[in-house]
Length: 369
Ligand SMILES: *Cc1c(COP(=O)(O)O)cnc(C)c1O
Figure 1 (cartoon, rainbow, N blue to C red):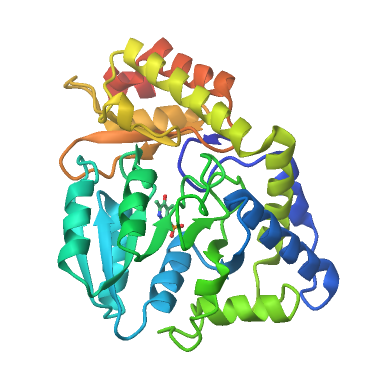
Figure 2: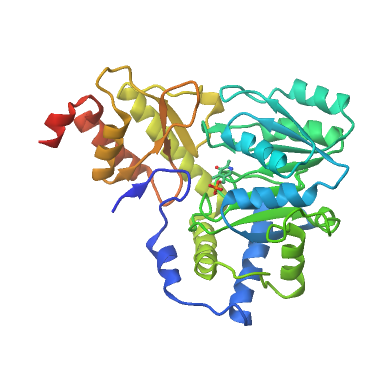
């Protein structure tokens, strides 16, 4: 047994896991009522403003992103992608696969989104109809400034799509106040469910316009939404019933914890204890503090000739913690996630396991002996 210090799947509670021990029929109201309760709760978490709706979509988070990109843009539309990491670049890759006209402002993995350039791009290109960005760029752990971008997108009156996959539920976001038209997340991140579906919260008047636009049958977000709306929570195709049930329990536990504000504070504390402790052990973070999210943190490899990430990883795993390899192109690094059913004590135990042994400097042979 180990704790997952990764940004999804994450460590779930025993009670979330145990809800999956029952098989559910998808044909009657018991199950569909759960789906409807989930949809309402997601909207409630996304904004206090009226006029928003939600839809659940089978698959990984990327499937949900692909369903939004593939369903929202019409034949004459164009997407502007703001990228500073692998997940922003993945939106670009989706647009390329689906042959959707697009342009990308790539600020590089180590760069912040430059709103002056976003403003220029929207002023210069009137064909751009939609803007997409990632909130917490899980590649580095950077928290992008939604508010700054939202002001510009709103000024230019374009539609705003946000991949809030790794932040929704763990960081307060008011999509109404931020003018977000489509917000995407998934079951296995900050809501603390298990993997199997993604979801989209959307402005209802924008969702209603999307009939016939999708470039894929199974990822037709509009038809999925309409079926759920008209048939009381029914999915078009086989739904991940166990995962949905677990997610419903996870939402209840989010409420029991005190809501998104309380969860955010727990994650902030996890992150603070982690960064402080790692720095005391001599590790350096990739990003400056002001860019950090409380979701996941990137640390540079220590400058020790004996350091081997795979050995470090294996030894921590044996000691009850699974960390995450780095994903940044130009730096040797690894990542530690601080979301899921984890608290400050877990982070302190992790730091102790690292500090007690300094595994990363140990010789492999001595370590095995
Ligand atoms: C996890 C994540 C995704 C989706 O990843 P999947 O592996 O498809 O679930 C998308 N965007 C961000 C920012 C993420 O953190």
